[in-house]
Image 1 (cartoon, rainbow, N blue to C red):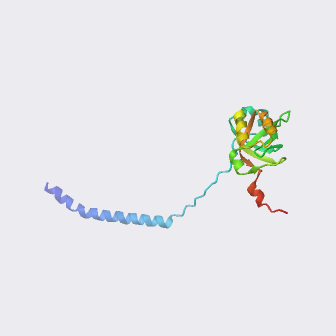
Image 2: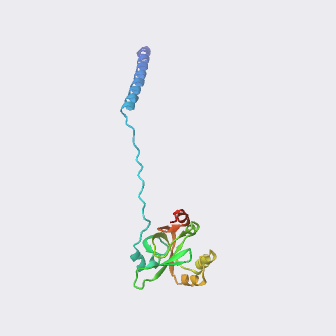
Image 3: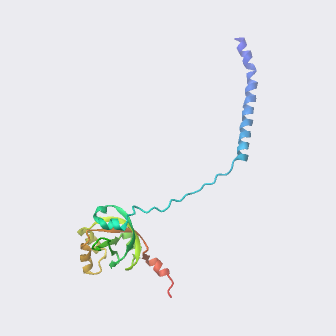
Length: 180
């Protein structure tokens, strides 16, 4: 057993030297990294605006009932006639040029969004089946300034509840325009 003790006596000095050598090696490596490392440039790629479920107007005109319950985007819609301040009619591209109703959501009404007859707009919204309860809610909200307006809206089998509209005027932008 005496030989084991003697053989380990020299290893203590060797262990201290190896520890110091490791610290020097790590320090040298860190110094080398700090000299050779280049800063990383972070590039933020913004996603392009994607049109939500864009439906060609001709396809939509061919069968509006098949889109009930879907949120769609229709581009290039011509405002034919206004129905109060909360809705408007457009003409479908079917053989009869059927009138189709688009109604502003509560958020658009709150933002005082308005359209004028003859303008072209892009709309996004939910295609919804018409019901008496919807007509009653619209009437309670003041969507029908004349009694005939409700009667006209009753002819719509379904309509688009517009949640987003581009190409329409809001009262904020109208008041900022300079008058000539």
